[in-house]
Image 1: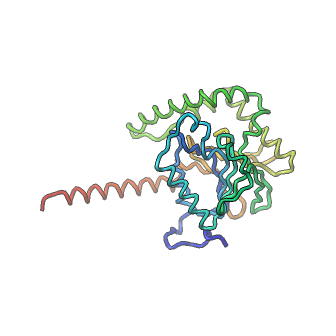
Image 2: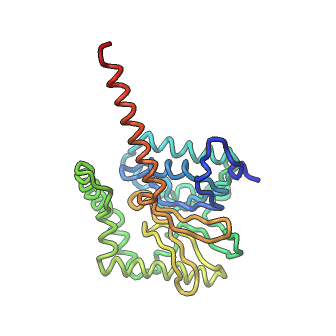
Image 3: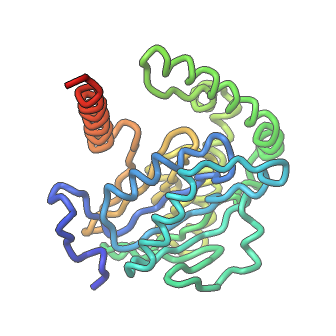
Length: 286
C-alpha cells in the first residue's frame, strides 16, 4: 500500500481521498501561474497517484524572461515530497515544456517522465493520458490559435491581470476575460469543438475508451464521438483538475469555487485577524 493511503494523525477525516489526480498547464516561470492555489489543492487532498499532464513549466516564455515566485518553489517541493512518500508521479510532457521530451521514459526518484501513458481506471476503462498538442494540427483553426496563443494570449492575460487587480480592490473574486472570450467568440468555440473531436477520434482509432488531456485551457468532462473526453483545464485561469474516485468515477474540480478551498481561505483570514489582534494587545502599554 502507498504511504499516501495510510491515514496520518495530521490528516482530517474530511480530507478528500482519490485514486488519481490529473492536472496540467501550470506554466511555472510566468506571471500568471497560480502555483500557490495548486499547492493548496495538493496539500488539501490525498491520492494514490498524480499525473502532471504537460506544460508544468513554460519553457517558451522563460526564453524571453523568467518570472519566479516563492510559491513555485513550494509547489515543486510539494510534488517532490509526494514522490518521496511513495506516491507515483507521472510527468507527461507538453509543448511548452517540450525540452523534456528527449528525456522521456526516464525516472527521477518516484517521478516518471513520459510523452504519453495508458491509464487503467478502477472500473476497467483504458484511457490515454497525453498533453494534447499532438492533435492540434488537424483542427480547422490551428493556425489562428497558434497566432493568438503566442502574442494575443499574452495580451489577454495582461488584461486579466489588470482587471483582477481592480476586482481584488473591490473585494470581488477572480474572473477570466480570456475564458469569457473562448465561450463567446464563434471561431474560438469552433476550435475547441474541433480539438475535442480530434482527440476523441484519435484515441478511438487507437482502441482507447477515452482520453485525458490539457493544452487548450478549457476544462471538460463529456462524451465525444462515443468515447470519454476529459480535459484538465489549467492553473493559470480556471484552476481545475480531473480526479478519479476509488470506484473509477471521474470528477472535474473547480478549485477556486470549491467549498474546501473557501473554508481554507476563511480559516486563513480568521488566523490572520487573531494574529493582528494579539499583536495589537501586546503593543499596548502595561
